Amino acid sequence: MRELLITVDHAAGDLTGQLTRAVRAAVQDGRLAAGTRLPATRALAAELGVSRGVAVEAYAQLVAEGYLVGRHGSGTRVADGVTPPGPPTPPPPAAAEPTHDLKPGTPDLAAFPRAGWAAAVRRALADAPHTDLGYGDPAGLPAVRAELAGYLGRVRAAAATPDRVMVVSGVGQGLALLARVLTRRGHGPFAVEDPCSPGTLGLLRAHGIEPVGVPVDDHGLDVAALAASGAGTVLVTPAHQYPTGVVLSPGRRAELAAWAHRTGGVVIEDDYDAEFRYDREPVGCLQGLAHDRVVHLGSVSKSLAPGLRLGWAVLPPWLAADFREAKRYTDLGTGVVDQLAFGRLLADGAYDRHLRDLRARYRARRDALVAALAAELPAARVRGVAAGLHLYLDLPDGSDEAAVVAAAGERRLRVEPVAPMRLAPGGPALALGYAGLPEHRLREAAHLLATAVAAAG
Image 1: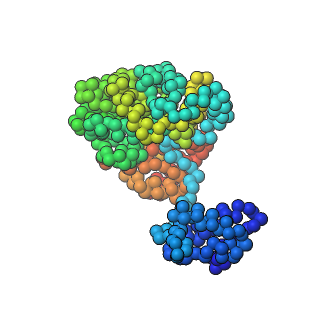
Image 2: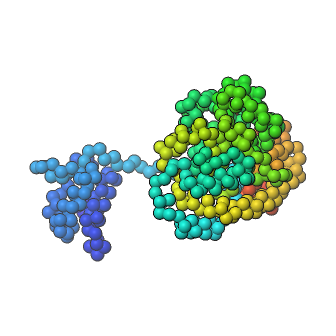
Image 3: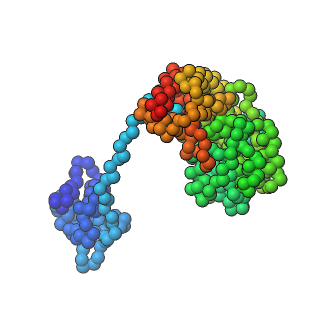
C-alpha cells in the first residue's frame, strides 16, 4: 500500500480509525478505482505493522459504508458507483467590498444588545421547565405567544390572542407557509404591491406563484386596481411600503378592509419597519381593523437582527389550524431558546427600551442622509422619510438607473436599484438604507452618489 501513501501513526492511537479514513480517502479521490482488489488483511497488517484485527475491522467498516465489497474467493475490492470528485470549482472573483453600504432592509448589526440577550438566555434557561426543551406545539411556546399577544395588542393595536399567535422563523417562513396554505384553499391569484421587495417576488415564484402587481401611489396600494385584478390574496406593507416608503392612508385602509370583507379575500400584512416612525406614534396595524380577513406578519429582523430568524404570525381563527399544521410539517417548530430569550425581553420591558434607543439613533442618521442628498443631489426627490430604515430616491430626469448603480459600485458605494422591484415599468430610482452607517459616513455616501450620478451622465 506504499504506492497509495496509506500509512498509520502508531503513536497517535486509534489505528483502526486511521486505516479506515486513509482507505476511504483513497477511494474517494480516485487513487483506488472501482474494482481494484485490496491486499489481504494479513498482508496489509504486516505491511503497516499492525495487528490483523485492525485491518479486518477497517475493511468491515468500509464494507458497511459501501466503499468496499467482499466476495468469497475473490477477496476485497473497491465497490462500483463511488464517484470521485471532479476538479475543484474555482471560486468566483471576489468583488471589492463596499466602503459605504446603503443596502436597505438591514439594521445596525452593531446595535444588537449582546449583553442583554445573553442575560435573557441565562435567565430563561434557568427558569424554563425541562419540558420546554422537547417537541412542543409547532406554533411556539405558550408563554412566549402570550407575551407576543400582549405586546402586539399594546404597541400595534392588533386583535391578538395567544391561540391566534404563531411563532415562525421570520416573515419569510410565515409568507412561505401562507403561500402553501392559501393556494391549497383556492385563495388566488396572489397580488403584491408594485414595486415591492425582489426577495418577496422570488419567494412567491419559488412556490409556484406568479404575483400580480398592483400599483402604489402617494396614498399606498391602489385598492380599486386591486379589485380590478381579480386577486384573492394581497400582500401589503402598510406601515412603511417597501420600497417607496409611503404609509397606507386611512382611506385606503378602510377600502382594503372593505375589499376583503366584500370578496372574501385575504390580506397579508407584512408589518415592515413598523417599529420605526419618526414624525408621530406608529400607525396601528391593519389587522386591528379586519382581524377576520388579515394575517399579520412581523419579526425581529429589523429591531434586533435578521440572523435570529424569529418572527410571528397573527391569524384569523379559520386559518390558524391549517397554518399550525403547515408549520408542524415544515420544521416541527422554531428553536425554543431564542423564543425563551425574546419572551424574557418582552416581559422585562427591555425590548421596548431597546427600540427607544434605536429610534433616536436611526432618526439622526435619516436626517443626516436627507440633508446631504438635498445638498449633493438637489435635482433628485427624496420620499418615504417618515418611517423605517430606508428612503426612496427618485433620480434626476434622464438618469440611467443601471449606469448610476454601476458607477456607484466603482466608487465602492452600494445602492439598491428599484428596477428589479417593479412588475411594471417606472422611472429611475434607488432605495437607500441608512441604518448601518454613522452620520459622517452617510454624508460621504451622498457625495459619492452625486459623483456617480454625474459620471453616469
